[in-house]
Length: 76
Image 1 (cartoon, one colour):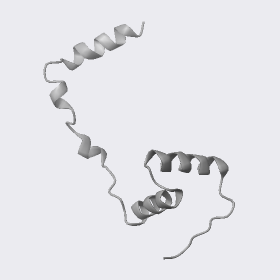
Image 2: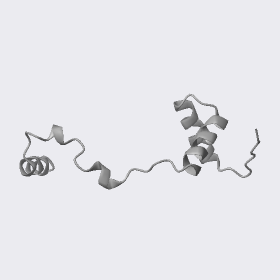
Image 3: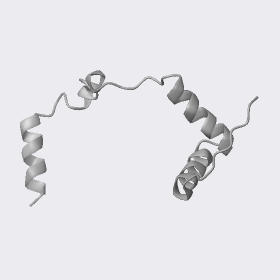
Image 4: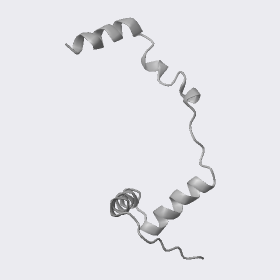
């Protein structure tokens, strides 16, 4: 397996990567490999159009106009 060295890596980005690796219970090398593989292999990106109707079951008994009015009233 090949080795990859990265020079002049931004410290803040390194810290974010380290936290992300910890959150996913991976080593830094595993996390970098995982991210690169997802990007290079073309991890499927979600289209906004795929979200149409998402969560509609939560709104079946809620009138949208009433909800919006109630939200606006809560701002003042």
